[in-house]
Length: 132
Image 1: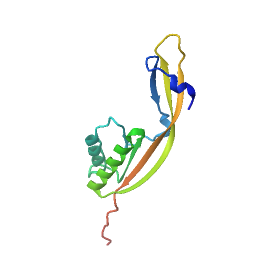
Image 2: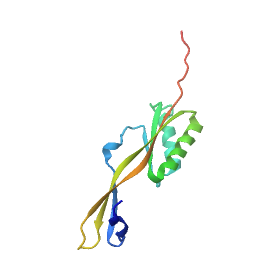
Image 3: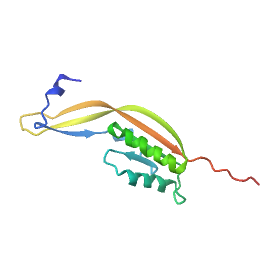
Image 4: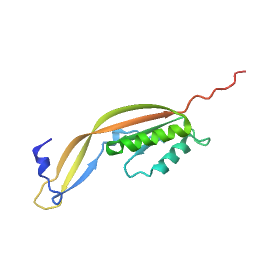
């Protein structure tokens, strides 16, 4: 961490957090969890994706930073309702914060940092069918 980080005054800079969108897939069966996400609505979305009208036997739930606990909770609640198998992976990704000056005499700055991420794949068990 740079020494400069400790001297930033919130009255001087506004922070814009940015992710590299190429780091995340955008499939219809992907669920992204944030701290502001409505938990019940996301659980219902998971259920809808695997319902009889849904075409998916697997959904993937993503979370990062302070949303890790909510992401894990969503996956566990989904598992309780569906008896799905969970496969979890964790990683760290680099994110960039852009600091835009609120005063005319300051220059814009950028700061990079590492954030923890979790990916949970929820797969429905195979349905046994009778053989002829």
